[in-house]
Length: 51
Image (cartoon, rainbow, N blue to C red; front, side, top):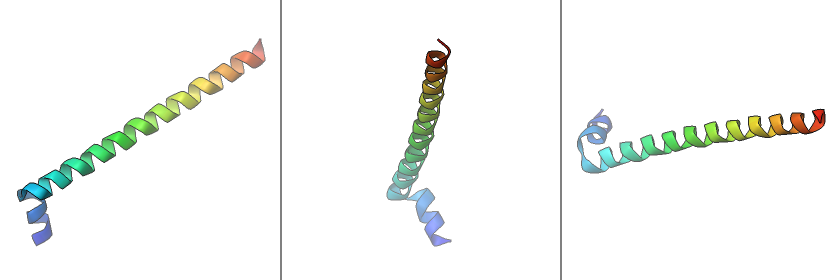
């Protein structure tokens, strides 16, 4: 329990929370970007095969 109190009240704990949040957002962004690029590539391949 003391670890949670330190996490939410100390400067280093809040900094750690900020880093954890940033890494999670960055992972979501890169996952979304990769999925979008894969869909675009599949659409381009289908278009080339149809032509």
